[in-house]
Amino acid sequence: MQKRYTIPKPPHGSQEWLDVRWQNEQFLKRITASIAAAIHGENSFVTPEDLAAELLAKTPPVPKEQNDAMLRGTLMEPVVAHMASLHLNVTITEPQDLYCYEEDGVRLMATMDGKDLSGNFYEIKTTNKRWDGKLPRSWYWQGVQQAICTDAPEIIWAIMDSTWQIHYHTQVVTSDERQQHIDAVRKFLGFIDMGMMPEGAVPTYDNASTIYPEGYENTVALSDDVYNTGGEKVSLTEVTEILHTAFPGHEWLAVAVDDAQWGQRLVVAVSGADHPSINEVSAVLSSALGDIAKAKQLLTFDQMPTIGIGKIDRAQISKRAQEDFNG
Image (cartoon, rainbow, N blue to C red; front, side, top):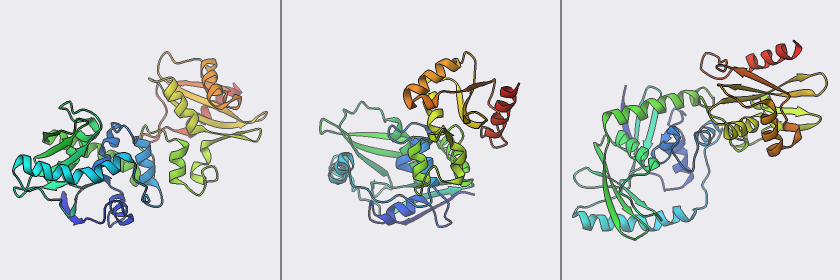
């Protein structure tokens, strides 16, 4: 069942602002329009893993000092809104509510910079780049979510670019675009609601520190993510991420299995044809992390084994590693 509602807008950037954007009254996490592109892997500054880590954390984000881009927006966006009112001969005011949309497994929120007396919604942007007439993908998905939350057929953009000129762009959002975004959010939040990283996400050590600020290596939920040999420790997540970067086009997973000689040995699993050799894998890992990260075993799969929810089955890979090693 679809539900749209508004809540009073707290002071921008305050802790209360961050709290209501992070979760709803039922303590279920939601997606805000400004970060919506991360769901699709199309945000230049925030990865799906970054977003997931923020939502999986035990506490909401805290206020941060404004960077140059944020300060530019704070100072210039009211000016741009006023100039747009004059250019378009309309009265644009800033809505004092946050716009929310919910349906089964989907929770969205949008902040709007402006609304005129005819009910049209506006998004105000400043950029240090020249406007080329096309919305960047991160802005595009922001507009799609804003249209969903406000139930508006279109979003009007007023953009001041590096030439100090204001450009206008009307983004008409189709029903197919809305449904595509809703489906992607439902899938993403489905994992978050289960306390899991979304399918295909490869968290970094920083992501893990966001989720577990009390200590990454000492957290039971991440105990399987540490490779420990000879008293030295390596993050298996970091190993996996390095391999994804160095050898794209393959699915990778690093696991640690018990070893009589080493205490543990590093095992790397890969799926896909024409994969690199264990020597190539070890060369990349030792270059990035030192000799401790040399792989002792390489397992190959046509497709990675998974458990019912689509998550890679670490236990099955570890079992296969021991069986192959023992012959």
